Image (cartoon, rainbow, N blue to C red; front, top):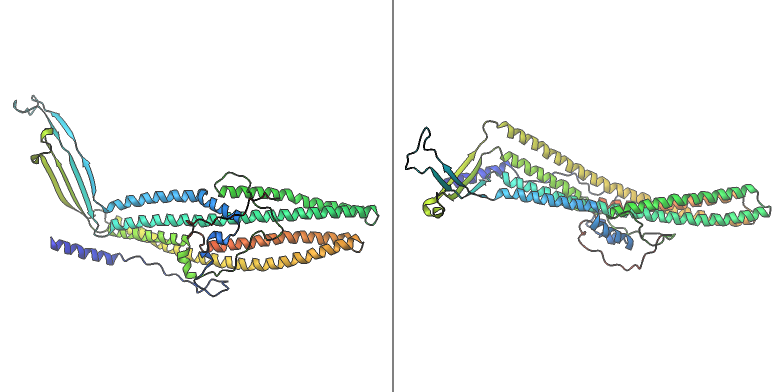
Length: 483
């Protein structure tokens, strides 16, 4: 017996050498992200909680609701339950399999057949046979253990998939909210422009009555006012559609989003400059990369299990029961029956089948490695793209604000000059149209900058590590409906 144990241990060690432990693939990690202004360090924007980054009470409430009710997140959570059950099924292979059974039979025999029984033999008899069966596969080569490891890795992958979904939902809600606030701001600018053009139309009509300007100037002023008014229904429609989009992200039916009235100032406070962090930390910070690696670990474990199938399967089997013609003797010592055996199975007829299985699962592992490496490269690109966008949109916003300031001053001056007859109507129209377009572009530039911040936070893997925490209670007062 001792020699058998020693031989088994030797074979197990040999199997370990055949199936080396998983090792993360080599990744060409850059020293810094492209476009990273500050020196790489340990701190990162992704370390902030989402309520610290998006410092808006309405947005905080929307995000908290979405993380609880969003359908994509709830589907991802249900998928975790599915794979948790599958992992539980896989884990049962490492424990003995026990089954209970039994039966009762009653037989009648012919006394006039071709082989008649003696008259003294009972023509009717019965028997009772309860038993317990047990079997256990000795996992000498790690086939069952690797199947269990693969199932657990798949479960972990679904958990990381849920966190990836959380990040996506946070980004989608923030992007939709910023789009909604930008539309609010554009609507406020348009209504202010309508008010200004209405006053200018009144001034032009007064100038026409005094004979200072022609009727053509009045017509042009009316057309300019109508053009600004025509933009309001389109913006209102876009606002309703964006509200509907937000409500669906929240897991609700389409409805208005209650929020504060839009002001002609920054509608969202930009966060302070926060370092981007180390590129190498991205491998553990982003859940989609950890999901890809979990799938790679699963593929590696499945390959080991298939390789183990090339070796013999050794199982212990046994049964314990009793057999008796009467119930009174069923559980007595003479009725006891038992068996014990050692099964040894080695494929002989079709050994090539398992060899092809090894080739197939080796190819799957190669695919998983390449997909993981591709995901990492894509993650580095997303961070670099977001950094470039943030820098570009920040510069564009500064230039746009300078343009708006200059055009606003020019517009005020030309209206004053027009009122006293020093400027032509065409100068007024040109200044007004340029200011209106520049103000709308400034809103768009500000929205683009906020979206770049959202994408950078998402690309760095921010938001999911602290998702279990609750945002602090804020007392922002009752929000007002938008103007």
